[in-house]
Amino acid sequence: MKKLLILCLLLSFNATALNIKDIKFINSEGEKVELSQIESEIIFEWANLECPYVKRHYGSNNMQATQEFAKSKNIMWITVISSANGKQGYIPPKEAMNTFASFGSFPDHVMIDENGDLGKQFNAKTTPHIFIADKNKNIIYQGAIDDAGGSQFWTTDLKESTNFVKTVISDIKSKKPVSVSKTRPYGCSVKYG
View (cartoon, rainbow, N blue to C red):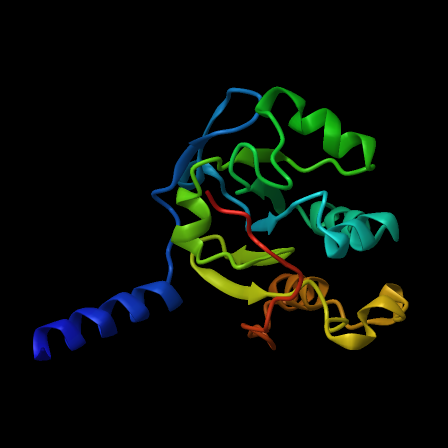
């Protein structure tokens, strides 16, 4: 029992101190992406374009504006679809970039995580769910895009909400300690298989 408790503690420690430098994947365009070869910070956005929360963020241009802000600061943006084939939000790899472009979104990469391996490694729970990695590929932020979650989400002007992603980016680029490292994500559950 004692060994099991120690193992559980180690696993929970590793989940909160996730380093992603060894992750490699094939993006929706068939290109190999090795995170250790990327010099910039990276933002991961878990998305499901059929989720009403994601639809609202994209429909109000909130997600695209956040993405543009990140890219203007030379931060890579990776959109991850962990919806299993046949589940809400699944997009065939060949259609992914054009689908996001039709919403005015131009991530650096789209990854179709059909088997959910990457989502489970990150412990992605919702769409949207955001993770930010520093240049050393340590996760320094995970959670919601902003503070608009809850019952007020449907009536809040998303432009008036506190955008946690922009806050963390500003902290990074000002070489300040990150002022917020974890928030509660909100949205639809990730549609794992």
